[in-house]
Image (cartoon, rainbow, N blue to C red; front, side, top):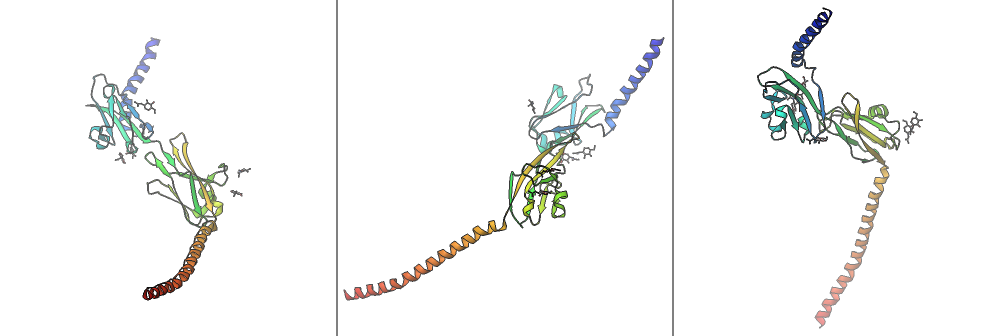
Length: 268
Ligand SMILES: *[C@@H]1O[C@H](CO)[C@@H](O)[C@H](O)[C@H]1NC(C)=O
Ligand SMILES: *[C@@H]1O[C@H](CO)[C@@H](O)[C@H](O)[C@H]1NC(C)=O
Ligand SMILES: *[C@@H]1O[C@H](CO)[C@@H](O)[C@H](O)[C@H]1NC(C)=O
Ligand SMILES: *[C@@H]1O[C@H](CO)[C@@H](O)[C@H](O)[C@H]1NC(C)=O
Ligand SMILES: *[C@@H]1O[C@H](CO)[C@@H](O)[C@H](O)[C@H]1NC(C)=O
């Protein structure tokens, strides 16, 4: 008696859950686990829908059956009777919303797939004092996140802070040609004190881990660029002077020579 009264609520709870869970998975957009993949590496989606009747698996990306997606043609394989969707060599545009379902049934399993974002900057950047600076933070991994810039004037990158906090109004961040929000950093007239380490970071996932790329900015003295130019000017000037003097000296005796030559010829 005591046993039955204990089992009945459990059984009811089980039935309740069994009837509620599939419809929950089917209707709620929030029930969409995220899958982060590394661009160019492989990724695998495993369909866990119960499939006792050996129904055919149906895979979609962005609500389109994967067999109809030209971009995925010959780039994915299905294993375990279709329960596993594998992309052996992924590309940036593989990000999107994926589902698996069973042919003729309503249940679906969802994934939000996106590429892990990696940032890139050149190791070194040189600019002449007073000139414009333009830094491009390149990103691999879609959808592109908004990147965050930090600056440190110390050689080891100590005490790095947000660029806007340190350089204030002088710095402009804007969307890069690649389409990365804040991907381009601009400074109108570089000061010598702007030299240092510039980093752009892409926050990855909820874990808060970030991928960071850093460039070392060297600011050259204005005259450092001017001196070689003046040197070349001076060289050209001296060369012209030498040529002029030489030509002047040459042309006079030349005329005399030809004159005397002519005289000589007439004489002979
Ligand atoms: C997928 O990539 C992982 C490393 O990221 C590797 O260990 C694994 O062997 C790869 N699987 C296939 C099927 O290529
Ligand atoms: C679907 O995936 C593509 C990438 O292949 C992406 O550009 C697009 O924004 C996604 N979403 C929709 C609704 O098309
Ligand atoms: C995936 O679906 C969510 C809503 O469920 C939508 O906001 C998002 O734009 C979709 N992503 C893609 C790449 O289509
Ligand atoms: C670096 O910046 C700090 C202020 O943020 C300043 O006090 C310090 O002098 C600077 N160091 C150099 C080498 O410019
Ligand atoms: C970094 O900041 C600390 C205090 O905030 C200071 O003691 C230290 O000298 C700074 N380092 C550099 C390299 O500026």
